[in-house]
Image 1 (cartoon, one colour):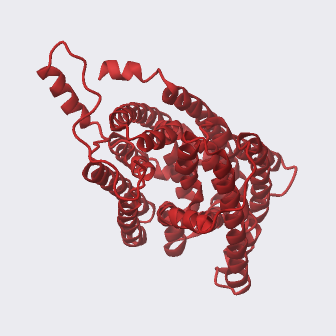
Image 2 (cartoon, helix red, strand yellow; image 1 turned 90 degrees about the horizontal axis):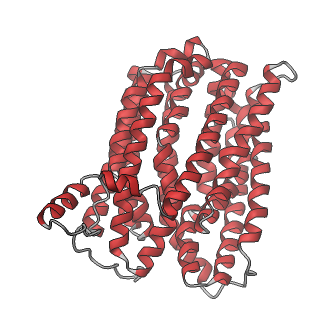
Length: 463
């Protein structure tokens, strides 16, 4: 394992992961500053109102993206493996037109029913209304991120959302903190819309140079086939974002905006715990898709095993460092926000267990095992909603955190189980036990990168 850990610093996945980590660290630092400034400027109650509006538009934009974001990673990587650049450009055009059209319809429906129809509570209406332009913009951002990742361009994929957007919002909030303008939850949403627009323009220009071929008219049934292929990704993404945002929305329903605001720093710190795992996923996805298209199962096993080791090591280090500085981080939001500090330890331990399971969900995506991914996601959301509804109403933020922990464990365990059962690939650190055992049985010989026979692709999958 020590040799494997040293070897992780070499190769294209490692280089891509290092670039991704660098961007994520800088982006998360700026996003942290953004959250602190928002909490200071808006107060706990205003921060909670803004969080509910953001949760609403995140769910809506995820539905509007139709699943084309994650599908783009697999589709573009595999088409480029076959040098089919014209189809890549056509796929990108079809997915973009479809997503933007649906986003406009969803935004109009929320405005009609939620804001003017008074379905949304009065205290949140103005803020949600100001956030509605974010729906098509975020849908566009989701698609361009997946498309850039499919081209293997980590920086282009991450820069708009991870760096540009929080930087612009932070500068605007700093001006409000200095008293240069009056920030409210609604004006905060308008500033966020402007920041997302700038990131979308950057992505559009960058992708214009990556997709060199001109799109053609889709063949008969081709666009419909892409929509069918994206549908499982849409279901998974919708279930995922609902589960992610459920804590905020459930707390808003059963407690107060102030309670929601006090819990937001905890939610904001969860992505930091996933820093290493997400950084590895960015360059790993296209390589797994290409390896699956070639039928190179030995490389798939080797890549997932190394990814699990790197993710676990990085997550342990990140969680440990985060727990040490937690009083300073939460104190920056305000003294009242220290009340939930103890929740970080339990969520951090759950994230370490999740990292040990390896990139199982990513492998299932790239191998087109969408039925298993969907089942795992349905179970996960069921755990999130049932635990959240009961525990948050009884214990407030502590109950919401318990629901998050149960969700993390369910999601990772079930995806790992399906990857091992359906693909014959143990993506977790447990795979090292067999590797070390086989090495001991064959002294003097290098370990085989595989871990046993793997069934070939199923009907309709890439050979």
